[in-house]
Figure 1: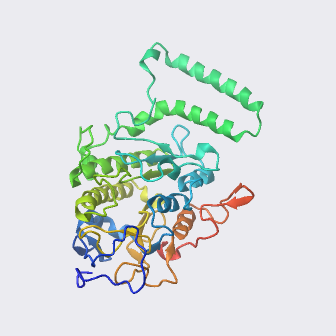
Figure 2: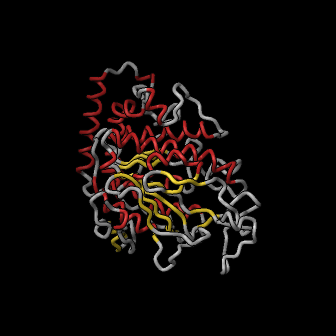
Figure 3: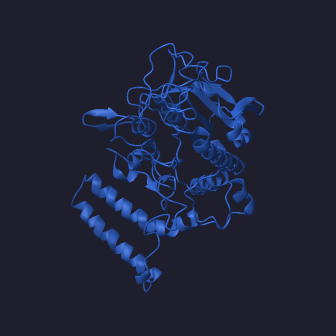
Length: 415
């Protein structure tokens, strides 16, 4: 790309780009250099990942079946490009259950600026019982969870009285349930309300960072004492914002939350505060990339030093990549034809690379053997002790599963 920078792009075949972003070839915005014992080349903007690169397994020939944000994001989160299917975390919650009765099994930590494409459809339980849906927590907001704290008008209630009320409600709910055997929606609602009550005791401690030592806050790029969050972004601010979500994720994981999803970027249009820069990649992706790298590297280091990385799987992905050609000189269009993700931790072989793109980063080098999103999902389930072909739910006469009728475990990245 450096050699051919500025030359007219020629893909050797007709290309249907999302916004016709087929301008001249555009070299990498940032320089690359090798990191770690494995010598993996990383862009300088994500240099913090160099500290943990020997723990990462990269997949460079991943493909998507859609170049549209909403559909491609759903494919990553649910295994399907259409809405109405359970998120991956919902399948894991259904299969493995909870490790903590006082916290949700599946937690979602969205970008503080708003949700990404599809919003709650990315973590909704679909046709699975609704108790398996993701629970949204906003650690950077004054109220991370709505109604987590009792209202001030109820300050007269004692802990004993509160316990008696909950016991009475449980008895009434049980009597109501006994009269409606088999009503899954009722069971799910009762479980959700009971969990909400228990969370009033457990969630405040899990979400507070006050007991974290200063060196851990610095590791994650968190600025102690900061309670606001800016709309403008720079690298330090993004590290603080994304790092806070990553540290919250670690605190939830160590308390038994089974599946945590951390989001970076949102679907808020202009000015760009997301990973979709058709106009200026350096301006828009730079702060996000550096902030992500600080937080992600810190999470991996922190999990490792606590002995948690061996049984915690970390997966990083986007919905698709960007074209090697330019759009408007400094931007890039969508590229669903090939892109990269990486995995780390529980059962992953570190310091390895699976698959290659062609010389342009346009399509897989071997177009007959790309890596599908279903393959990644099958691999994740294998590492969690699950057979992706056996994890099913009967819906409309079909045994549905996260991997649809596809998916092969990527044995090359397993330790």
